[in-house]
Length: 142
Length: 188
Image (cartoon, rainbow over all chains, first blue to last red; front, side, top):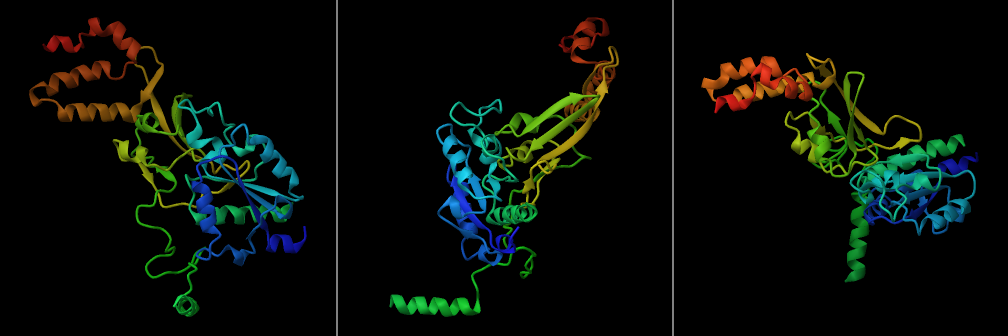
């Protein structure tokens, strides 16, 4: 594992459905107020440049193949962080009996392997930073 | 003017940075300045107070709370990955046993046990047929509540009836209600 990758992981924001709330919190986490660049974290526009995928949303069935494609485009070693209740279990997009609705798969880990889960609806920006720092620890071991 | 005010802002940020300290920065009064009062974080059960009535399970809007009765124990568990942190369980809990703490760093990795908050309550066995049917503490609380709120003139006879039927399962109550003479109809 090159040291530079651990000291400066670049993240790719993968929006897989969802209500935009986790995405707003993620953008807040990248702002100067929380200043994640001190960990070397940078948002990149292409999955081909990324080390960490930050995925939000319950993965609607239409989006699932694209989630898979984005995951395959990220070079090894890679770590996936699922942010928010939707990305973990389907959250509010579940039916009352707890199973996902007919339109969504209910969780990013149904499509791609996930390493770190960040619960919250939405999680605080600090919680997201904490989750990404956990992901960096996993990235260092890979 | 626009340029002047931006220069002023740049100078202000030189002396008072906009970045807040995280993790574990010291701020006047608080360790984390970012925790606003009333923040809804990880819910926790008070093991002493919880009676296992599962009012929270019925109230949970996202289906994160669930319970199972097995091996004489009722296990109430909350899956954080589905919780909305809405606080309805805290609101509804009659014993004030569920509390939403200020803990927000909940990230857990694959295969770790950080995903669940659990509580176990002992189940009482039916004194007739021996099947576990309701938590011991819950039955005690029902008795306390009923005797507290009932008319004082009825208190003694109802207390006697409760000795007979309270620790029997619903099915045994139905079967023996005539023979035990515990039906409320006798009071009217």
